[in-house]
Image (cartoon, one colour):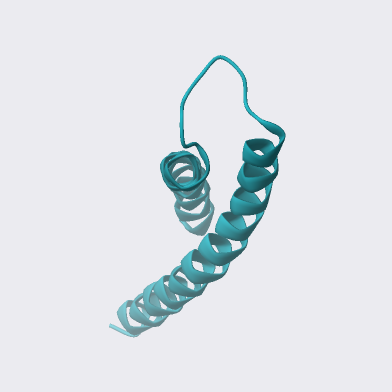
Amino acid sequence: MRTAVSQAFQQAFIALLVSGQQKACFKLCINKPGSDLSPSEKQCLAMCQDRYQEVFKNTFFRQYQGFLKTVEEESKGHDLE
């Protein structure tokens, strides 16, 4: 059960990370869309992506750990019945 939950979490994590990161960083860094990115846009995107991943990972993993703890506590309670 825990493996299935872990795999589902990883898939959801990646999907949310990529989707949110693309939207947030594009909005922040790209002023005038065109065929090429300027050096400053490239730098902004790289920094934005790094920061976004760091914050997202820390926040999401903290929530996930709390979820796993709850699931484990509930499953222990059911084992006693």
